[in-house]
Amino acid sequence: MIQDALFGEPKISIQTEGIKYAGSKLKLLPDILGIINSLSAKTVWDPFSGTTRVSQALSKSGYEVISSDRAEWSKVFATCYLMNENEPGYYQELIDHLNSMPPISGWFTENYGSDKPFSECGIKRPWQSKNTRKLDAIREEIDRLELSEIDKSVALTSLILALDKVDSTLGHFASYLKDWSPRSYNDLFLTVPQIWPNSASRNRVLCGDVFDLTKYVTADVAYLDPPYGSNNEKMPPSRVRYASYYHIWTTICLNDKPDLFGKANRRKDTSDTVAGSVFEEFRKDSEGNFIAVKAIERLIEEVNSRWVVLSYSSGGRATAQELVKALSDNGDIKLVKEIDYKKNVMAEMKWTNEWLSKIEEPHKEFLFLLDKG
Ligand SMILES: C[S@@+](CC[C@H](N)C(=O)[O-])C[C@H]1O[C@@H](n2cnc3c(N)ncnc32)[C@H](O)[C@@H]1O
Image 1 (spheres, rainbow, N blue to C red):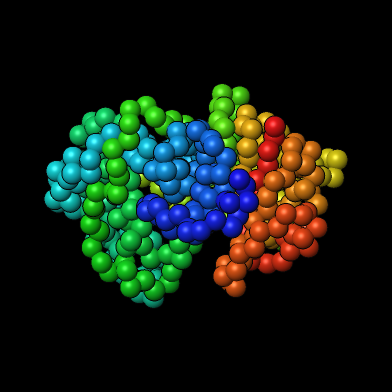
Image 2 (cartoon, rainbow, N blue to C red):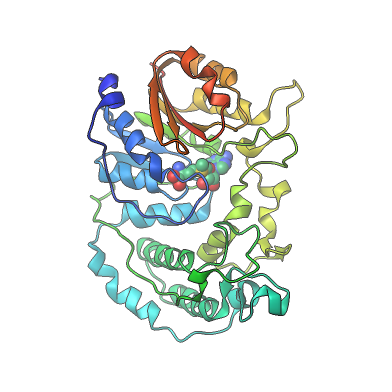
């Protein structure tokens, strides 16, 4: 059965929606679904949901999905896509109303907007102020309307998707471009997210650190897509620090006008000392083991699922040997799938020694299937 998932055609294609996000598994969706579809599973936990693209694809494929992440904005996306029971048209009036708000200059414009490019004012900002003025007006209106949690999540998701289309960044908010990006000249315009009516209480949406949730969540499959850390000794905490890269989406969801710091005006509570994830840690513990690798080991052990599908990227903190140990200490490795984006090649390997050397090569993504029995 697992062999069918390996070599079976045609590829599954499912429409999902999301923002630009480091480590988004958009391109891997057919492979992830192919593996999970071979398992006769009913429930899947996606505890590093990020953009929620994997959760969306799983829910659309008929699975009962538990979606979670430590990022507040990911919970908002998951609530929008997985908990909504209405047809998209139900939200058109709300979205039209938000688009009709007269722009105002408020907190977001002050901190994230500018009328001029860096060359003229010496300040880099992620949006042109014509768009942050719309953001200020729309965000205030969303609170004023006192919407239900699901309706509010649909409105906020629509706002974030629209802002993502007119930003002037390289795809994250840790630093901004010197010159306005071509897309930043476009006008912010909200559309109804590509939602579909879910059956009542089919899915669950949670928010929090994965280790706080393992005690409460049981599912047939856990799809684990943690941050990869970095194997670059010189690089501080990680290659991607999610809380600090995407702070602005959290602020838009909370609308809490937090204290800010640094040139990128990040939330103070996303500084590396406060918000680093254990999976992003580059240091060793007192016993000389990499903290990030230990965290992956602990997670594989603690998840209450027979099947674990683990995403991993070469260049991450764990070495091939360490991953083999973490996986094989907890069950049988049934499959290792290698995806080389640069060469656009995919390979499936049945035997550990086939991929042990490859995992150290750059630009590779791996999917492991573990049977915990
Ligand atoms: C590689 S990304 C996941 C991408 C996601 N699968 C997608 O397709 O968009 C890793 C995610 O882990 C989350 N994260 C980091 N540390 C976490 C932790 N300790 N508990 C829960 N989530 C965490 C980050 O917020 C980030 O969204």
